[in-house]
Length: 162
Length: 298
Image (cartoon, rainbow over all chains, first blue to last red):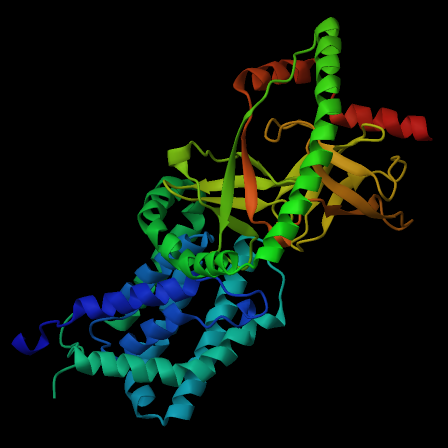
């Protein structure tokens, strides 16, 4: 068990904090619908890299915090993020070994799932009108994922996060 | 190689737990406001940090403004100020006259209410709702349900308050409704948001109601949330379709909801509020008045 002592926990939570900041940072109206889901990308990365440490329940907690930050109906993003992270944790080995473009495609389709679940729950509990622009973040995440992955891997190796 | 799931509970169990917890949160959403308030108070410094780049841009734009731009702006503001003060002189006279007349009628005199200028923080919000975040919170005395206006008209009401910031629901949100009255003939109506920023709809307008394109709608003060007399919207189209039981009326909000920067938070006067409720109970209900009105126009 001594092998499994957590290391660099603060690095991980700091990355979550930065992702949360990016998530609520103001963007021009033109770019706003393209806003990548920073927080979810970072959560996915850590769930993929250290699935025994950061997985569904920590993702759920971050989802609740995100709901509060956005002033949304509580629990919607928490539910959606936990579903996505479940898929990631289930297939983390396969995801890790994918070539980068394939990995990015998988992540992008997970982002689609994330937004669809949010829309569905929103539709059930409140009012919501379907808008195809819902899927724009999936495209921006497709482009941004390799960079997020690269940066976070460097951070992980630099601080020996385990 | 280290065992991956050597300890702990299975993923399926974790997912089930997360789903159950989420469903509990979704169902109990409205009862969790105290929790939400305390958590978002803790997190509100994040909002201030996220606001920094936008504020920095503003600041640089201000400090890089050229002299000619500033003098031009200054001239324009002076001109506006002159116009305003001229109107204000007349307004002051009218107000005194109105107060005297109200006193003669035995109606309560309108009090000046406390107002505070708040700045909109550039922070992203839930895309399914229309919110703005203000830089004033419970510390400045902001409360849930507080009316918010800008220079042109009613903007919305406060729905969430934490220590340092508060969240305002815009009148164009699909869940927002505000009681109004037509200035031309005092018909009372309810304006609802549609989810589109520059479009509001009037619900349950009978086809015989006297309402025209261009009518100004001001808050009626019924419902005891918004003070009376603030402009809300202007009627843009009235469609009376034979197949529908009500007229389809679309209005446009007067406040420029897409580019609000500075807003006024209003503290309605407590005394006035209680007097108004008394007044309300003695007058006819809005439904009766609508009926009467439709009879008149028939």
